[in-house]
Amino acid sequence: MTIFDNICSSNQNRAPLIEALNVLRRRNDAAFYAPGHKRGQGISELMLSLLGKKVFKSDLPELPELGNLFVPDEAIKEAQDLAAEAFGAKRTWFLVNGSSCGIAAGILAVCNPGDKIIVPRNIHHSVITGLILSGAIPVFLYPQCYSTWDLPLNITPKSLKATLKRHGNIKAVLIIHPTYHGICGNIKEIVKVTHSYNIPLLVDEAHGAHFQFHSALPSSALSEGADLSIQSTHKVLGAITQASMLHLQGNLINENKINQALQLMQSSSPSNLLLASLDGARQQIMIDGQKLLNKTIKLSELARSEINNINGFSTLELINKKPEFYDLDITRLTIDISSLGVSGWKIDKVLRTKFNVTAELPMLSSLTFIISIGNNKKDIISLVKALIGLKEMTLSSCSELSIPYLSYESKVFSCFNMSPRDAFFASKKIVPIEKSAGLISGEVLCPYPPGIPIIMPGEIITGEAIKYLVKIKQQGGIIAGCDNQDLKTIKVIN
Ligand SMILES: Cc1ncc(COP(=O)(O)O)c(C=O)c1O
Image (cartoon, rainbow, N blue to C red; front, side, top):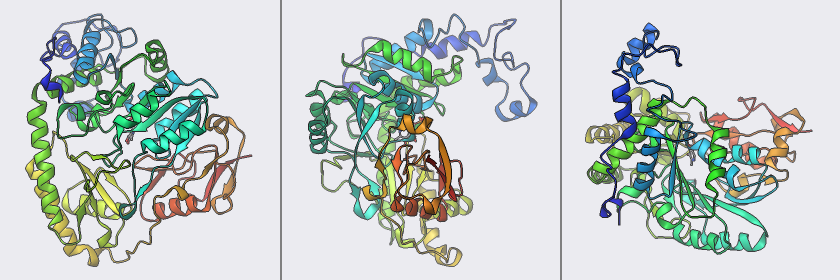
């Protein structure tokens, strides 16, 4: 069942923030408020040439008619209430700093210093922010690796159950649904297991804001009973970059704590352009979602059938449902490029410079593409043509290329020794990376994308982890989080 099967009581056709901005941008105000460009009058010529005049008339602060994000009233309250109804939440908060701030706020709302929270090891960087700020202690679940694809899968209800049993006093569970590659676990069972301990399930649903709106997509976290879901509306729906939402349901998480935590994590001058884009994205997907997602799914099916016909390429598919790979978001297209003998980062560069095709996420042996409501058939044709072209040119233009790559397995990850918060504040020294195995890391080493830290503060550095990171760097990947991005040195705990 999708949201469209329930006729909503309120008027989802409305977009209160956009309506209010439409009135305000026409008003002839003597503006003595921020931002300093004063409705575009003082904006730089360069910005004008980039964006035109119109957009700046709507770049307004929290004027009375728009309302206040931290004490929602007026248009912002109405917009958030409509979003809560659309996404099936008791309450929805708009976020102007991405899912990243919502994830950290979620952890802050459920954990005090020293509390334990179960998290998969393939967490996004923002979970570490939440752990450092809250002082919570992570209890890691190591997801299996999808062997031939070098991709992390999801955690299973069985492993969660065993971990809950083994550790007393767990305060909350956080899962990723779906992963960056669109892989979902059995969230219904995970909710059941979590709730049997009367603790909340927080879901990093950064890549799943569209799930609610089409029955051919995996089920959304809230529809399966999760307590908190954080979604990057900007990643898959029509919102501006950074604009995201946090949804709450049930009584296991205190609403006021979410409020307080979000005030720690967000700007006190939220952009009304970002907020309005959330309003518009909700209205659009509620009114036209079925049609738009039908089109998106068809495009993805077309891409899959064409690409699987090209010798040497294959797309990631759900073949047999397993607890660790229970569902797949068909709009997330991951292509195995290992037959080319070139890393995903190098292929990504060639695709972009020679074919004007840009992927979302290059990894060592695959490329992932987000197909969303904004794509069209021309894009798919360009991608398919580029892949065919790539096959013809690869060996001549990228000759050096063989990758004995390291698998993305739990052995790569280090072993946890010190809380991320203690490690973050501890005194540190810098050592050559080749001499760091066995020491405790004082910083994050995180290939970007996908933003999954391979080493985090407080973990014992392993030789495997170093090898893996060096390999990624050599193959053209970017390592973020650490001071020395050349990976010559690393900060360790004194
Ligand atoms: C799994 C996952 N969670 C959270 C985030 C953070 O989302 P945002 O970019 O909206 O802050 C990302 C970003 O890529 C992600 O991949």
